[in-house]
Structures are given as structure tokens and as C-alpha cells.
Length: 112
Image 1 (cartoon, helix red, strand yellow):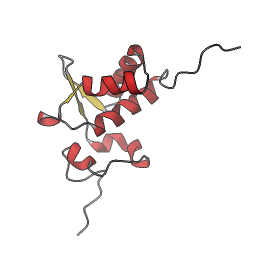
Image 2 (cartoon, one colour):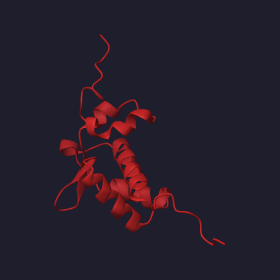
Image 3 (tube, helix red, strand yellow):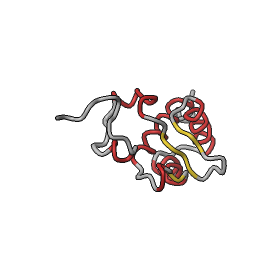
């Protein structure tokens, strides 16, 4: 008999995917920098993830080249969209190219 519910972000991969998805919706400041608290707060308070799930998900995303974290730990950057191909099957915000500061997304050329 289980007394607790299964946590959706207990595994590192779903947590990392959600962090990248959150990072893609946040407007980057200077040079594509996304302050860590801009993805930490929604993950922990809206999605009810824990601090350890956030940390493991962030580590997983960095190891797989989806995000990069500054050595100070204050901000992250999205890596080039080619490395995050799994987003192609998800609903993507219309202004994702502007957010990622890339003229094209996933190698698709703009309409003529």
C-alpha cells in the first residue's frame, strides 16, 4: 500500500526537460543569460518540484548539453536548438526564435 503519490520529477530526465522548457519561455537578458531563479521559482512553486529534483534535473540538462551554467551559478544559457531536438514534438511558443536569439529553429528556413 502506497501512502505517497509518485513524484513526476523524481527521475532526472523529465525534470531536465521541464527545466529546458521553462528556460525557453523565459525572456533572456544579456547575451542569452537566464537568471537561475527565473526557472527555479516556477519549478518549485508552480510545478511543486523539490530542491533536489531541481538540482538533479539541472545537472542532467547540463551533462546532456541542453543548458550551460555559469561558474557563479547565477544564470544558465540555452544551448543551440539543434541539441534539443525533442522539443520539436512539443508545443513551442511562437517567439521561440527570438528568445533563443537564433534566426532559424531546428534548421528550418524561413518562408520566402
